[in-house]
Length: 316
Picture (tube, rainbow, N blue to C red):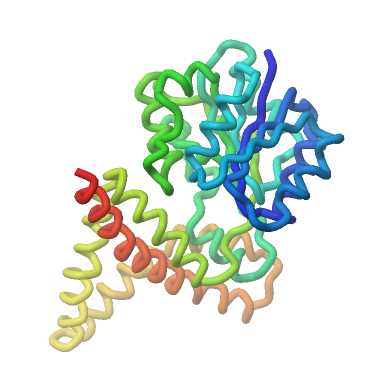
């Protein structure tokens, strides 16, 4: 069966080259690559034009489209019955396409989850990846919901659930995953289908990313219990602990350090493996960043979530 790889882009410029080069290196070449451009004002279209003679590439221009609309437009235009979805800025493992589409080609599934891993370029990115991204052994394949950096499905499955939700600008892939899972149950998980991507470069960029993710959660009413627990922890639990520091210093510090240690334990385990070979001082600096990154991410979520809830209430 023909296989179409799709992606949506806007102002990606040179960040497109790693993706397109990795598509050229696939052990199973795609039958077509359909990319929807949402109205780039940089040299994105020029970069795409450079690859038209090397890849079976089709470029759609849909100015003003968001991520969901761009993906839906690319999938609708795709000729193949099998769709593999990825993003600009990633590098695909050479066996990515072969691995992620095999269960679909053999009629074993309608949706397949691929995997993603950070490709850090700086020490900060190493720490950020270890802090906020799961490791492979953290994953329960029965419950894993794939990112649209690395997912594949039958085009008819996409049609049956109405495609990606075009009313949602962030978190759209989770809503799409939930709709697919409701129809098809758990997806086969193929960890060999790896998409490598670079984490955010700065705390400011990370804050904005998590703000937008949480705003998407609020818009789509995703994870309300998780967000409620976060608010209770910071707005009720922490003030109680700080008050204890005045009354019973030892108990207060025990609760503060014990709770913080538990919260940072799993990221610390991942970072320990990622920093093998580092010297003691670089490693110490790296571990000290975990709590800061956790705090920044939580604040971003607590600011973004109500913005999304407010948007949802207004849409009623």
